[in-house]
Each structure stands twice: as structure tokens, then as C-alpha cells.
Amino acid sequence: MARRLPSQPPVLPGFSHVHILGSGGFADVFLYEQNMPRRQVAVKVLLSEVVNDHVRQMFQAEANLMAQLSSHPSILTVYQASVSSDGRPYLVMEMCSSALSERYRREPLPVAEVLRIAVKIGSAVETAHRAGVLHRDIKPSNILLTAYGHPVLSDFGIAATLVTADAEEAVGMSIPWSAPEVLLGENSGSVAAEVWSFAATVYSLLAGRSPFEVPGKSNKSADLIARIGRGRPQPIDRADVPHSLETALARAMSRNPEHRPRTILELVHELQAIESELGLAQTPIEVAMDDWALGTVSDLEDRTRVRALNSDASTSTGRPRRRRRRRAATAPESVVLENAQPSRSGSITQPASRSATALTWTLVVTAVLVLALAATAVYVLLRNNSSIPVVTDIEARERAGDVVFTWPDPGLREGDSYQIETSDGARSMQTNPAFVVAGDVGEEVCITVTVNRSGTTGSPSNQKCATVGQ
Image (cartoon, rainbow, N blue to C red):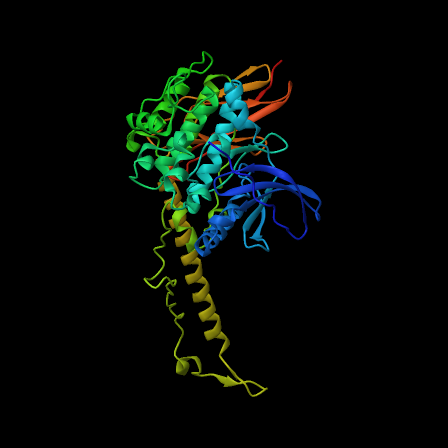
């Protein structure tokens, strides 16, 4: 198929064009040098033939989304977005390499490297989902590498907002990594579909091909769609890929969305457990835990939202309800002034005995209220935490380069997880009762394990420490 020539690079104030980096169905990416601060950046410019008022509006919304999410260490950083003098919207982004998408086709990637990349990218997708954002185009070519080799996810939903009349061509760009329900038009995207695409991407990095490609046979779009609809991915022909990993990916690519993990985070926990199974240090999960870090941008992003955010404290008009505050009970004015005597300055004062009595009663009532509130708080905390099991009897096995911590299951229920905090402040969530901490020989490493149930953490375990052996 003939490839189009790249468009003319726009003139951007404060930037100097260097050369073309790549071309896609809706945009070209150019290398520019920013004058101040001086650095090389990637500039993604939409093609003039796809630009209209609707596209400009959606492009602005997607740029806002990427800027909001790009504070995540595994999401591509967006520096700025604007419209060039010739009317084409553009994004100025961190300069990254696409070498990974070429390398996995050329040579087998180590399983440990793929698991590390998967946990980091999975953390990015989970963070986006918690912010109400679907990526819509998870695939190997959208995983880039920073100058320091850190994987980052790019193109959050931008391609999905730029579908023109030739929708078949737009979807065809990502057929190998699209969930069957999306290809069949049953929905335009969901968390379950993202789980499928994420698993298909991890599979591809391991196998060197997409899950439904058959070497030596026809792999046209129609062939791939038919195989994806049947839901039987090809086996990964590698002896070093554990059966547990292949099984986890196959389950995440189930034809029935209900048979897949409910969230990306669940699948990431399985990948961490496989890291421990292979004797690898678990890659930390990087998911924003604070509500302020997961705010939304505007109603323009509805096409990429998982669900609307509801608030019980709002009225139907969207305005927060005001609670009428009861005024503190005070004595009637006539009582306050009863028996009052004028002072030497002419002002009215109360008798000392009455004032002291009122103050005493006020202090007593205040003390009773404080004690009641404290007792209520203690009761609620004890009631919420008493049912959450506590991890005990953590054991440590020292070995060269790391320490393996294990503990007996204290009685986890479905949906529970362990929250692990290491002595350097790093945190991780998992369901496997084992954790590996890497370190230098002779270094003391410590962990604390807490059970998390429905977003509530119980009492932490005693800290367990060990020294990294030789």
C-alpha cells in the first residue's frame, strides 16, 4: 500500500524544525528544538484535511486530558498544546523513542523486562481509569521509552476522537489489539475492553507478534477479526515464559468480558505475583491514591470517560447543598440583663456569681461533647478495623542481591489485598503472600504489611527486617 508523504512542518514561535519523526493516519510527528528552555521535543501536528471545528474542540479536550495525566511517571509528558498559524492543532511532547515497538518484533524480550514494563504501563492505565479516562488504543507502538529507558504510554484517546468517514480504516489500525466486543461494534470502549487490549499488548511483547497472528498464514484484517471473535490466542512459543503468565494473559483475553479481571490493577497484581514466582523483585505499582490527583477536566472528555462522578452532597441543579446551622442556644436578652449593674464606665455588667456559673456549665457541656465524640470515633475505628485480619509471622529468606519475605494468609477474602511498605517509603499492592526486596550486599531492608479491604486498611504488621546476603 502506498504511503503518503509527510505534511509541511508548521512554523512555531520559539521552536526550530529539525526533521520528520513519523507519520500516522491523522497526524505527523516532527522533531523540533525548543529555544527556551533549550531542549529537543516531539511535536505532533494534525493533518489539515482532518481538521474541522469539532476536531479542534476534541483535540483541545484530549490535550487537556494528557496534560492532566502526564504527571504520572509512565505517561508521556505534554509540555504545551496550541494551533499553528496555518490552523493545524499540535502537541509539544517529551522526546521519546519508539525502539520498543520495533525491537519486540526483531528479538525476544526478556520475561523480566516485559513484566517490569507491564506493571508500569498497567499502573498508568489504572490511574487513567480512576480519573474516568479510557485510553482506547493500547498497543505496543504506543509504549515509548524515555532517554533513561523508562516506558511511557502515549496517545490517550486522540486517535479515537479523529475518526472520519473512513471509520473502517481508523479501526483497522489497531485491530490486533482491539477487544472482540469493540470490533463487533457492541461498545466503543470499556474497562473490560482495556483489560483485553493491555493483555494483548503484553502478549505481543513476549511472543514477538500479536495474539491472533498465525505465522505462515494470511493475517489480513478479516482473518484477525474472525480469530479474535473465536477467542483462542495462539500459544507463546517460548520455553522461558511460565505457564502461569500465559494463563493469566489468556484469561484477560477471554471472549466473555465477565471472565476477565475486573480492573487493570487486578491483572497487574497477578503479574507481580509471577515476578515473585520467578524470584524477581516486584516492580512497584504507581497508582495515585489521593482524590485531588484524580480530578476531571471538563465535559468535553465524555467520550473517554469510564463513568460520571456522582456526589450525594449535590442537588439536582448540581449546586452543593447548604446545611442550615443551628444557632447556639443563648439565654433570652431579658435574663442576661437581669440584675445587671452599671459599671463605673457606664456599661452594663453581670454579677460575678452568675457569670461564673454560666462559664462552669459551658465548660462541663463542652467536655461531655468532646468525650462523646472521642468515644464515637474510637468505636467506629475499632468496628471498621476489627474485622480486617492482621498479618503476623513474617519470615525473611536472605539471598544474593535481595531478600524474600513470606507470611501465612491471615484470612483474606475475595477483593482483599496486601499493602506493602518498604523501609525506603515505597508502596505496593498485591494478593500474593510473598514479596521480594532488592538491595546491596549487607544492606538492611524492612517491610510492613497491611491488609486492605474495600479501600480500608487494617492494623499494620510488625516491621520485619533482614540483611541482603552475598
